[in-house]
Image (tube, rainbow, N blue to C red; front, top):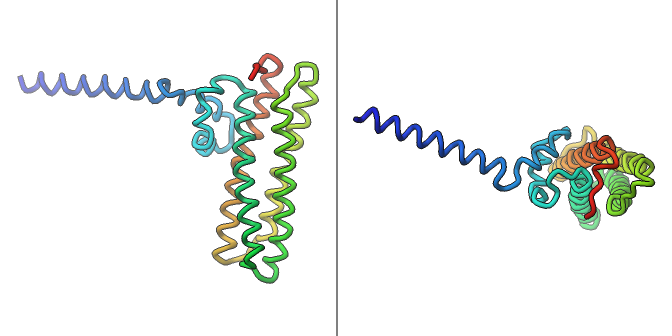
Amino acid sequence: MRMACIHSLMTFMFVALLMNSGQLAYGNGCSYVQEACSVTRYPDICVHSLASFSSTAKRSPSKWARAGVSVTIGEVKDVAKNLKKLKKYRLMKGKNRIALSDCIECIQDALDELHKSLDVLRRLSKSTFNEQMSDLLTWISAALTDEDTCLDGFEDQKGKQVKLLQNQVLNATYITSNALALVNKLAATGLASITVP
């Protein structure tokens, strides 16, 4: 009798576990973001930053690419804001202060490239698709290079503010890299992947 109860309980728990994992994967659209993020270099960061787009983007590479670039713009804007605060309150001295000015310029350039990219993603056209993809890949790669260049200025530097800055810019590079991968997927998928917004 007792064994039968234990067996029933275990069966119930197993079924409940299966139902839960099914809900996690499909009930809230989680599988869409995981599928989209599978092409990225930093899938965990991708899933975390883009999960809220699952229900609208579903399996549309163009919508995922647009979401990836939008989120990247938000992240890079936050970086730019924090860098300007560091400069305004003179929280960095000497060599770091010069590197900070260069970094602000690099991050602004990255933002410009990302804004141009989002503009193109909002008006994808079958007639100019290949040209648009070429521009997008160039611009987002340039944004990533700008972010890396910002970090180069602080190489081998120490201090709390430097570490915070490096961590934030580094996180922006991960998100930018993911956006680039999502645009790459769109380019590889081709014309059929364009859906009306």
